[in-house]
Image 1: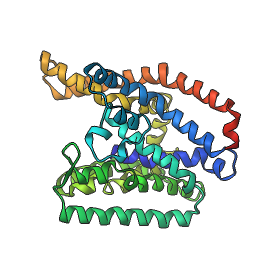
Image 2: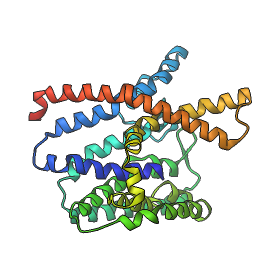
Image 3: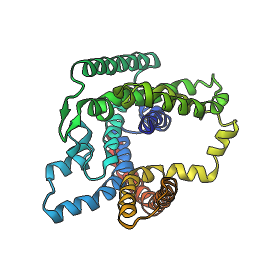
Length: 316
């Protein structure tokens, strides 16, 4: 569900930041792509580097595998040895780079064309789910990975509808014809109910994709009106800072939790699961904030300045 929200939100934010600029040629496609690549690559490289160094030390590093990872192509390979390599959560960055590339063409479509394309993508994914779940539900691909997990959770083309939905929500929002403040009070209960129901009654392929999409879209829409009390809370300075650091948090959290789990079992720490979760959450937030403030923000500022000075990008 969290990844679905990120993809939908990404479609909205990229439309907000670059939609009119690309359509009006205020920014070149080359410069847009360079800025998006520079946004993701530094932390992607940094968080994967310790594991690449370990593999080099062991003599296990595969240069094609590492090259595919560095170029954000890993999600296209149906093998856990590829798309989950180095820093597992970075598979979603491969999808994001595909979305950013597709955006160059998608942004030129009209609102009705986007709706038709969205419907077509959802129909395609749903049809594939029926076929896979009916005829080959137990088929595995590389790394003993269920085909359904790769197709409906990882495969970039089958997640494009979520990004496109974010673009559609932006088109509706910019008209200024709706008010969504009341939704903020019911969205979280609806999400919790959806999680409870989904865990018990929904087939696994749908949980990988499609099932949560309406609920995360509703969550995004509820955030678009800043007049309600819950949304004012999320607009506070600390909430904004945490939001800015969320990318760093996302990339570092899994490995930190893995390390915490090993330490917990080895030294008998935190017999209570609740205490362990609270401690790890605090550690991940602290490390995520430090990574954002000390690395992501200054490196990003440096790269943006360099890209803005590359005059040839403005002509591409």
